[in-house]
Image (cartoon, one colour):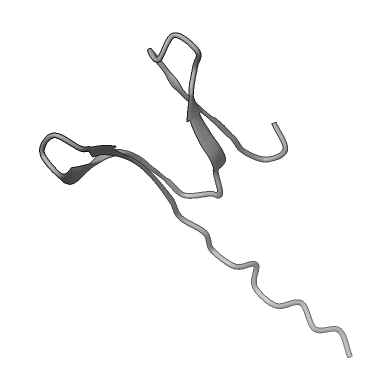
Length: 53
């Protein structure tokens, strides 16, 4: 008997926190897993890992 469960559906939410206004700001919602978000060294861009890249 072969059992192939449905793959788990994952949603990732990229947010930043505004410490002046004390609230989260939604940047983007992804229908897949993203990991390790961080700012570039010039603090102009957010980067993240996804699908091994």
